[in-house]
Image 1 (cartoon, rainbow, N blue to C red):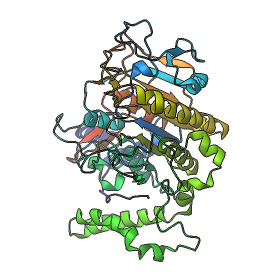
Image 2: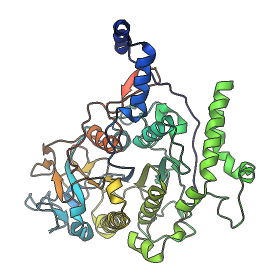
Image 3: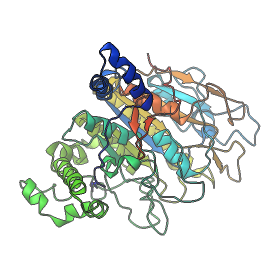
Image 4: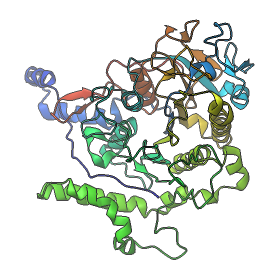
Length: 482
């Protein structure tokens, strides 16, 4: 079920104090404040932005932290206490040490670049998850909380949503979508978590993603580890799936579809500006959820059985297939999260059995299918695919090859939108503990994504205090494009 969160916060384009002082002198030469403001607005609208390589981004978040030693940066020559239980196999990419449980990706490695040097200092899931989805560390102290707040930095997808709205590009599909659930909603806790990183943060709830809401069978269920039925995989908007004609008036009158706006309304102050913001968001949201294009993109039943089998009938595979459908329909940014409904999954503290039996085979099947499918449809050149966790795993393993949190080294996969396939970027030390070449931060990853979309990473927007802040702080786009 698609869920719409929040309400619009209005942000105004602005100008820095330094620029304003410059205008004071420049006015003597015929350059006035209105002209400078117009130039600033042109830049914000795309006039000063890099040429876009990608129309859309599919961001595959392997939450919990896949082990670099069991995936794309194996160390078969490391000591026996480090190297892991799996063997490397040959790939199309020279020097790529890839797991034996990723044979399809080994055969398709000419389509992607492996960044072997992702690194950051935050070793807990909430901070790291926020960091990898925003390019900024979380403001909450480690251990102080698990849930998103209104002070969080906006997700990259929320920034894209903001830019698209400022440019007046209101599509009949969402600019930013999140599948199959917002991060944390499937995790095994006594109360539902809203993990930080995927929301609009201080931009406002109106820039949160439109998110689907797939349920588990029971608290111990892990739909990423099994085939799912069509009844479970109902990504469609409830109330829009009937054969009869659904008008906006009928949609507007259905309490079940409008309940999702209650939280937004409670958060708006009782003043005309607040109500106006709410009404703008409400009409925009209703236009999206009543759009036949959105409805059709979310209806996975329109795909052939063979295509659905190709991606994998598990929750990750089917969600990535829906992501492809959304991108094909025009969505700019789609995040698909492989969450931890059993409490571990990619957060493999206990053993490597789940990696061998479910995690690696599921990733291998789905990511290889996505790259091949996008290429066959002529979409790979205009779609940037990013796949990574928020951290890696400790080089030294525990019993049964379980590994702890390790944020100073982990891999990322980038493909499409002109990324040079069959390449490696950066390198790690002999123990897969630290980068020794081209250390790559989440800021660099964010800058790469923004640049690919034609958004200047140094572009400034206003924070809640009205200060101009750059989209990324010292991030540099990776030189991985052809």
